[in-house]
Length: 487
Ligand SMILES: [Zn+2]
Image (tube, rainbow, N blue to C red; front, side, top):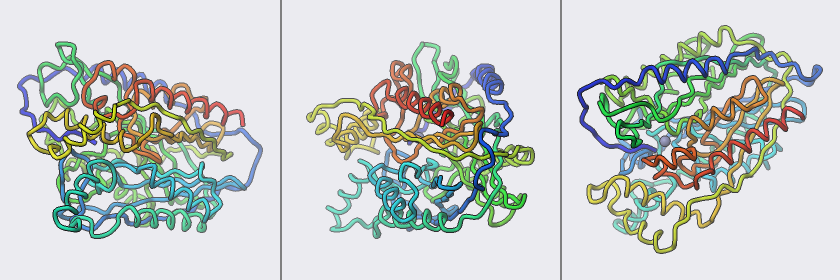
């Protein structure tokens, strides 16, 4: 979720290039490597089944992503859920990638339980992840509940919710997992990484006065430097049948908030999918996993390029696609896949607010989206109500680690993690290549670093977790990866 605030451009170009390039260079050194895994003797063959569901809501449904009531007026491109079921012998995983801003635990728990019952895939080996598109439906959370209840009180029924979107999503995702599970056929798998420069920018900046601000405005002369890194690595998996590419997963850390407006859209991953279909075939399935990008977006503050539009989204998606297509042509095969998975539920501490504070925050919801309350107070009010709705001191967050081979693994975890946290997992992972997918199974909001909590600003204000929660998730992921390596 991101603030939607218009700012006037300042006049002098800030010097932010060199620092970003330094991060890119360091990351480049850390992420090269040969990925042909060889840990176990020849085992059962690898199989993949896939399914795609259209999850576009009816036009008129509220949209997510910003702090005001936004009603959809059309569909730019469809929202989809893409299910991949991978199996080898008795090991079976289900990964589902949805064109949504997030997926709440209350819903994914049900989907994972039902899908596990229907397919015999262990629920711990199923994840439902969101791409974080900001042009999808607002179907859960304090703002949705407030708008929905206010509309129901006004009109006796909510005209924006003529159908139960969450219920239909649940049904479609369970069906997609079942369908993917029952359609598995042998595949070869290829894995590797690409470097994507120039599209992603850490959106928190240290200003000349020492404060830290999120997106302080294009060409702002008071910017000193970015406050954190980006991760330019694109993690890639591709599945081929008899040498012919049939499906792939790309993981990249860049907020899916490049389109804006009031029409449903899957944001830049739509164009990645389109370009890969042009390259391979019309039924090629391109799944997109959000890398850790809580503090990373596409706004290059050193230019005056328009901020959000269909064209900007298409430019980003096709640029990323060109990088991906080139890397896929050279992607090495995993010679000996050895699937395994482990997971852990981390009782992640939440920030504490008293009953009175939660009550007061609830009272501010009618002012959200108006000019009657400073923006950060609006953000804090929604966050505090969200913590009140959880009704617990900690949030049970599932961290999952999947092994594909002796050198390739994938981690899935909830929330919008800062880039630095994902980088820490990759750097400390015992696997040569580790994909890190965020926004899996729950949407507890931003998960900043301890340092960012101390610096303050938009994302920490909009975070429900207590400082240190992100580092706990990172530690759990690293522990899981080490246990997978030994398995
Ligand atoms: Zn976000």
